[in-house]
Length: 150
Image 1 (cartoon, one colour):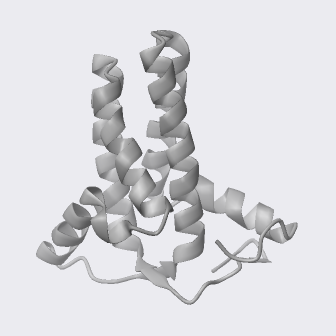
Image 2 (image 1 turned 60 degrees about the vertical axis):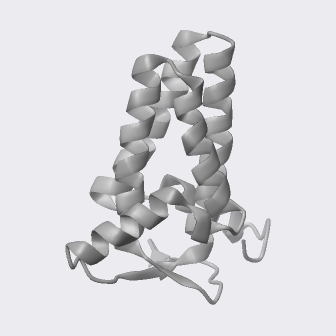
């Protein structure tokens, strides 16, 4: 993967960009629902899903499963992208959702709305435009050799 002249460290695994973008659409729906109802339990579904994808158990991700079935059903095809930045982005999402849940539980509505809004914004960028903010973070950290591969 190369953007703006920067090379991204690559692991040997590839994932389907269309599945990733479909997962992001589901994240938007669940995050909007959790934000509207100010419900930490609904947001907890996102925490579980981000956790499965970030920590190497993506085969157990319900959102990924639904996304794969949707992509297959609608014959959207396959567009390969490197897994490492996407896995890192899922880790960032896990932390953000954890903060979102904490703020909801503490009944800090405004900060929870801000964090929830950022989650929705970033998932929207991924879903609609294929812009992965977590992947950009990964790329910058890798550029400074903070890690070799995630």
